[in-house]
Amino acid sequence: MIGALGQGSRPVVAARLALMGVLVFAFVWKAATPPIPALLTALGFGLIGIAAAFRRPADRRVARWFDTAMGLAGALALLALAQALRLGHHPLANPAWEEAAALLGPLPGAISVAPFDTLQALPAVIAPFLAFAGTLAFFDEDRSATALIRCLALLGGAFALFGLVQVTLLPGSLFLFEKAYYIDSLTGFWVNRNVAGALLGVASFAALVWLLDVVKGIDRPRRVALLLREDDTGLSSAQLLPAALLALCLLALFLTKSRGALVATGAAYGVVLPLLMQDAAGRLWRGRGAGMGRRTVWLRIAAVVAGLLSVGLVVLLFGGLASARLMQEGVDEGRLCFYRAAWAAFRAQPWLGWGLGTFDSVFPLFREPDCGALSISVSRAHNAYLQGLVELGLPFALFVVALVGSLLVLIRSGARNRIRRRHVPIAGLGVVILLACHGLVDFSPQIPGMAIYTAIFLGAVATIGLRRRRAAPQRPRPVDQDGAWADA
Image 1 (cartoon, one colour):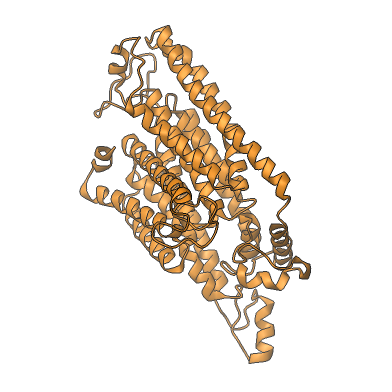
Image 2 (tube, rainbow, N blue to C red; image 1 turned 90 degrees about the vertical axis):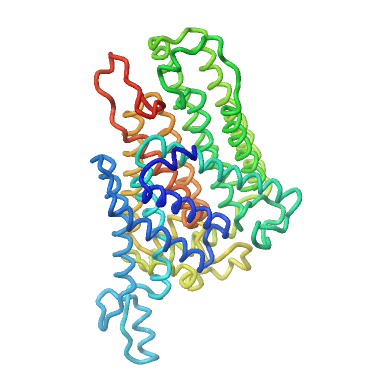
């Protein structure tokens, strides 16, 4: 794995290490939510994005998705800059500026009610897109992209392992900082248990990709795999490590006590598991046709099925416990208060919003008097979609459609393009479903560390999924120069 990351020219290796280094920095510093680490993380990925622009992927299909990521980042930046622009007699200015001018004298107006907050929020918003583009540019072949996914699984496993130590021995620690909230829940290096739960769900998919790679023998050259004896079915440390990481992430997810993360992860696995089972069954006859003995084929299929059923049972257990907690504690009135206020704020400025990063300034204007004291943070709407509509208006809805549509097209292309590694784009679909569902009840997609981790994972999925099919499938496929990635 380390060898795969170290292959390539010195600038490429340096860029890969820089990308991982900035991610780890964001990981251990409260997911880069405080202003200073958020700015430093965004600056790091800004430099990586600039470097990536000078190393645009040579493959036209990969380059198209690279351009798409850069284009979405540019569109967001232009919209935010337009919101922050202050002009005299601004035709689209928020009415609040006219009211302020009546009291303070002539003032240049802007779409945003807090232009400085809009500019301050912009770098963290575009950083995930730069991380995705940087992954496409610098992890541009199977070996490095696979090594990157395994590094992400290890990072998620380290997060989960520290979380287990945290809830048993160090309940007041966030590794480098003191823990003040959710003392009874696992949060890892981060402050919020719901975001930690979503991160562990995504990390479990990275570990699942690693596990299925090992079970399918992706690390072995095809010629070597065909020469293996049929009775060679023993477990190895290479198989146990990703399985242990998967179990560790799911156990830690349970200990976060996050209902939203548990249900979102369960929904994602509810879609992914049948697709993986279908893919495993379809490979049965292809495996036999490739020269593999019947007994070995069935044993490998049984191993995959057993592992997936284990994951399914854990997910079902999590879903049952989450449902029980929901029935016991009831609906969170605090979130309903946020949703009503956010919807009212959106209806007041539906076309261009109140300005990126201004929700905490706008929310008090629309908070209902009977909401009472709230036990949750008022800086975010606890619904990523509603907050996006409040801050950016209807253009945000168009942006979400473009983003989700692009990801689904990318995943579909990868699933059709790959045969032996179809589980990689399927896992990518699971991550998209997880975050799309969790964004309905919380703000995990808005946390820089969480969004960047997910973007890097999806970038690696894109690199693997966009490899071209090889011609002449009737003939044995040659082994690549590295020997381990010869088939689609």
